[in-house]
Length: 170
Image (tube, rainbow, N blue to C red; front, side, top):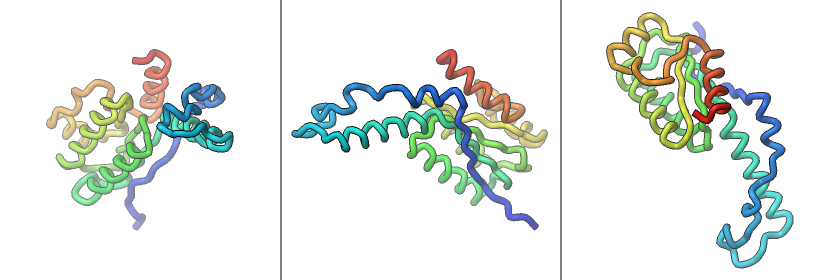
């Protein structure tokens, strides 16, 4: 029997490579902005610029969480921990693949909705796809199907919506 788990994949839109070549904000090297008494050395400025670029890349990267288990009890806790870690690392775009999940309880659904709300409040988003008929029925019964831009048929649609959000700013 195969091990059931939750794993993470990373997707960086190809167009984002152009954005990474953008200049860091002028004030990133300002020692006054950083609250330092002395100006930064050129090495410290480079570290600050590199860190800024890494954060920008992380914000553009879409993390795809593949759930290969039912979201009940301990697996819901594992999903919450994974989502919290992603958010702590400045991840702004998350897609959760539930195509291999057969069941979800109220705590699992609550985690998805609360983390989606948390990301949205900070300018990010969480999208879900791959719901079976059973999961769709549960989402409907608990009111989660009414959430705007939350449930998608497949990964391609969820990724496309993130691209649409980036292009339109909506």
